[in-house]
Image 1 (cartoon, rainbow, N blue to C red):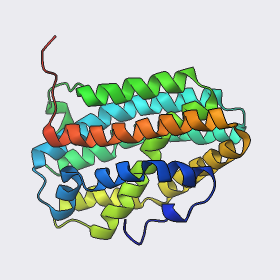
Image 2 (image 1 turned 180 degrees about the vertical axis):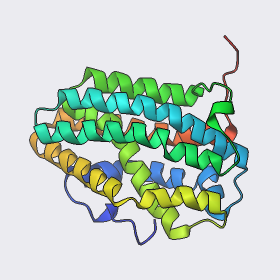
Image 3 (image 1 turned 90 degrees about the horizontal axis):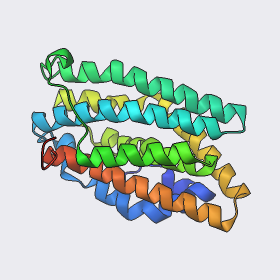
Image 4 (image 1 turned 90 degrees about the vertical axis):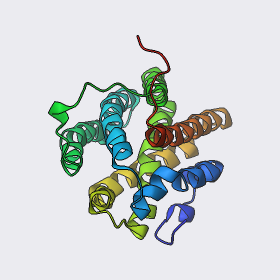
Length: 232
């Protein structure tokens, strides 16, 4: 990991969680999709595929955040998650359109997209877990997207990309508001760790670890431009 990554300096429950998924994170940052972003070798069609998949994913992620917020008892936790849900929609409507335009693609001219098998699995998993609750498990369901995105961003910002189109995407990771949101989410995680019993902590750990594996699968689907093996 690069020197700008500060996750290893954390303490509390969040530090324990990160230790359990460190090998998964190493696999994520070494995935050819992300190394191709950094060295500029990623074929453009795979990035376009990723952006379309991410647009669909963020719609579901926004719903999952709203579900998680509904389980919160602390009003500040509710406000944080509902605000993040609104931000996810704004990103879909704004940044993704800008990114696609850099490749000469107008979303209005694209064929209607559907989630890849890996993407569908990820979406259905977080929606079910976030809807079912309780709050600790609902937050664990959405934690990987927050935290992995932030840490991947630190790695990519440190490396940059020779392709200005990919560099523009990397620069979105530097948003200080997003960094503040992730820090606030991790503070909630640490609070949950202090209040939870051993069984609840174990469930949170398992759900978060699963989410991190699904993050890897999401990148991998974009690398392979994954499609369904049979049509409907």
